[in-house]
Length: 440
Image 1: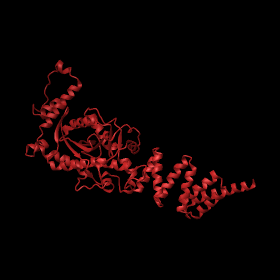
Image 2: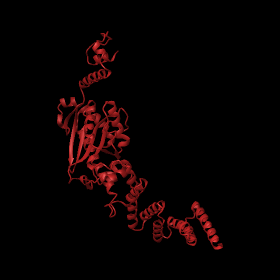
Image 3: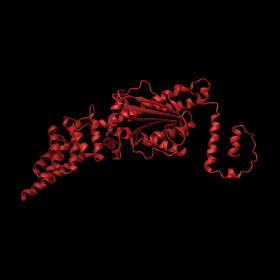
Image 4: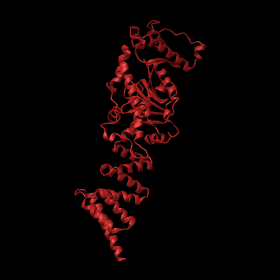
């Protein structure tokens, strides 16, 4: 049975048997493949619209059309529901006002590991988060809700594009395209692995150009995991907003329940199922904006620490800056941690900064840090060994180097065989050098 026969049978336009098809006219033969596909899609839409279930049928049963917040927006590919809201400049989200968020592009570049953000402004950012019919991706996963956020006139705007049924996907993607073309870069949370790949697939399936593919992208998951994850149970957005940002949700639908809620909505049209999902999505978009501000604030200022920053986060940021070639920023952060006083953080910061100086050939500055560390903690093995290297290779003061190695051996744990062998080898070499000096 041909596709045409099946369609006519489904629509009740003929019998069940195979019918002899009339020969195609020249006009039909001349139609392009795209035109025939468009005609087939039109017929499928007609069949879907005649289904006796779903939100449309539920509305006819007495559920009001305006039960969900938002307004119907018509695009060149159909209509879709768009819910718009604003977070005003004086409104708090957790511990801070979203509209106090500063996004210096040099810091955004460090967080993203790319330098392409320098020409942009805070208002050029498009925050994006999707809700879908599945959490594993794939061509069968449908993004029924796309939350978008951006800064505008001192406020933070959240637009949520909601597909009320599967046949509104093209309209949803078109509406997203219209917004994305006005922005210069993306901000997501785990968008690199999930949201953007999923949307790219849906754009291809709907034969619509993808406006997101060429945009620079800051995925907040990776800097958050590196800078904050060391002191958290996990690096999920919900954990970050609760433990770091001070955001409290009175009620939140679990992400794992969202796909089933959409399927239930398609069957019943119960608006309550989706209002919770819309609020969940709106909160996620707002939290991303606050999270960007928090991560940028960690950089502090030229005058010292970031306000209310955890010292371990600053140490993690300094290490990130070293890896990404931002040595001046790393030096400032590490120097602030050292100046804060003795303790494990100061020791770790001293280790990082001295090695940074050493790699740059700034031996005297590195030696000054090692002396400070050894003064605070006479048993600091790292400082003793590095000072021994300094005196052996740079000042040629073999006697002082020997005394430092002997002190390191005295403070070495008895079960550290590798370190002991290395120190004994260094001590033997120093004695040999001292003997050669006396002979001369």
